[in-house]
Image (cartoon, rainbow, N blue to C red; front, side, top):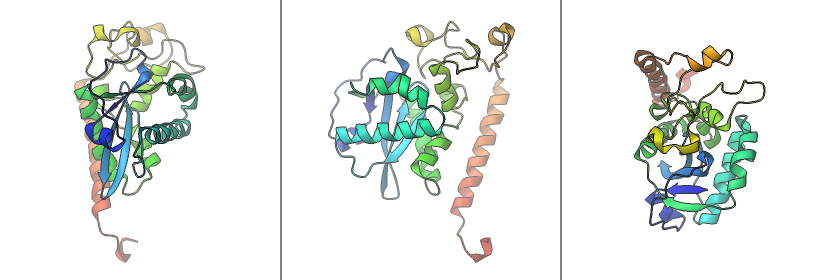
Length: 242
């Protein structure tokens, strides 16, 4: 497994990767981690490079690479089990954690998406636990994922769940990658994805993607909800509010 560290986090856990490793062929074997602060409190975000599925956990006391690995995958396991992805963690991620290689970051689109996630997390953490914050981040539509939720894309990468017809979901490419660079991680659709419902072959092969206007409307709605929440957080709390 490759974990790509930002300079801030690499310094904190006393690692010094010198090169950016090529993308891992196994989509579950490539992650990116960053360090951020809320007030004076440090947090670490670990993000799946392919789906942008993320976990957030406190950075206090995480000053060695072994401690980082232990805290990161404990938090990720708990987060995924709570979200109903426990089987995905046990099948696709846990077997890879015994052989971890640190790397410099490489994909700017992943980093850009992580910066957006961190901005949201800095507001959400005012009222939520790290686990609750991560749960909300994983329900955030991301431009690099064609405005799908990270948790949905993670599920597609893991494959159809029990009771869902095979082929009901297409695997999205890595953010910032071209179809020819995806290798085995890309479906025959060459990285193009449609909103599909399980059912007939016509639904699976001829599903109509959302229009740019629909995507913008969904994104605008989400942004308005976030702004309303942020405004509420900024209001002073006094007896008149109750």
